[in-house]
Amino acid sequence: MKKSYYVTLVAVGAIALLQAIYVMSLYNRYIDEKITSIDETLSISLDKEQHLRSLRKGGQRPQKQQYLSVKLIEDMSPQEVDSLTQLHPLPSSELYNIDSAREKGIVSRSTELMAQVGQDRLLRDGFPLDLKTLDSIFIKDIGFDYLHAFLYYNSNKEVLDSIGKLTNDVPDYTSKLIPLGTKGLQYLQIKADIPLLPFIKNQVWALLLSVILMIFVVLCMAYHLIVIRRKDVLLQKREDTINGTIHDLKSPLNSVVTTLGWLESGEANIAKKRAVEISQAEVKHLVCNIESLLVTVRKDRKRLVLKKEDIDILHLAEIVKSNMDVLYSAKPHSIEIVSELPEGVKIFADGMYIENVIRNLVENALKYSDDGVAVKVTLSVTGRILQVSVQDNGWGIAPAYQKKLFQQFYQVPRGEERIRKGYGIGLAQSKYIIDEHGGKIAVKSAEGEGSVFAFTIPLV
Image (cartoon, rainbow, N blue to C red; front, side, top):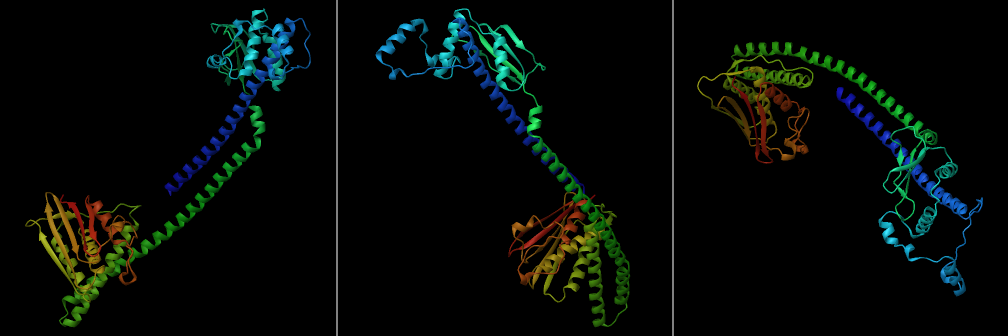
């Protein structure tokens, strides 16, 4: 259940992050638009202020509208070109290299060079930039009262004059130094605070919808978590009830096993004794399945309680062989036990659970094979490690399925003719038991060549 909470929190965080990124993209676009507007308005304002200085220089009164008569030199008559040259002689000192001006950042287009030349002449004639006039024109043209400041620099990039005010030490926008003229004698810069309120007003619906969407998603996920929680509690109650019922079945079944053992020991009739042996093996097999189911379903919630003691592992293997011979008496097979154990060796482990592991491995070898299968159980000790391997010449397992063999309820896909009754819990239980003993379990197999399941546990 905790994983569901974590996944939900991650999902909510991801959605919140996406919403934040979306809002930030809107805000960045708004900032870019305002910066572009400031730059364009400043360019126009500079042009108007320069025109007003040109009028003052000529002793003319400012006009409400500016007019500019343009005629291509190709369309002029020789007389017009001659008169233009006489009226505006161009001294060699005013010859300009446009490419050089672009490299120095004075102009970016050739048309701007005309304005910069005009600035040179006005500065030379004693008509410098009027910051108050520029500021008033800019405020009028921008259409909104930005908090801004104009800074006027000399050739050494020292501030000569300034106008305006800012509320922040670090303004939202600071333009690059704008050259006034081609000589690099004076520069202009604007700093401006871009207000947030217009952005909020323009994007109020988008922001509101984002918040509503976020709240809706959180409520939906909270609802699903509540539903999952309720179903989890109900499932837990059902599981506890089933586990309790299954556990209660073990006591009468153990009594049946004991009774059958008593009947077997006192039975002289060979046929009846054989029938009792088969019944006893079936009941033991059922008890083993019940224990496997209980161990597997409790794995994630309750650690396995081991009752370790010195056990005779060879004796346990022989018990498993005897039971499997009876249980699979109708199927031709052979089970061989090979002991490579040192004389008198004892293993400190939980005998009941280790017997279950050997039983699971041997039964799988008999179940997933054809008639005549040969099963070999090898017991050995290497160093201070016990190794038990169960080898068969059955159907084998493809490599693609081997990684999932020890997962709960997993069964290897097989054709209809090879489907066997099972629940996919035997190997999962075996791995859990061996892990709790501090050992390891592994498989080597190939289709059509059989399998070898082996587990190891420390001797102490």
